Length: 76
Image 1 (tube, helix red, strand yellow):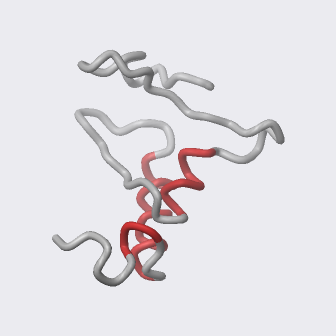
Image 2 (tube, rainbow, N blue to C red):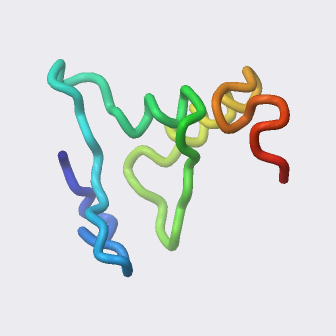
């Protein structure tokens, strides 16, 4: 787990904010979850290190109707 100097270490609910790298040290779990549609990109106050990659991953997940973006899964 690695924190981001541009963000607080904990959010207002006391949750740790950070990036989770898998044991291969290359796979960023946060990105993978967004790409597969199991999470979505959220920018609170300030852009963070991987904001563009996460937004791009969400666009791809939406386009390919993965996870949360599947037909009838989450109605806006």
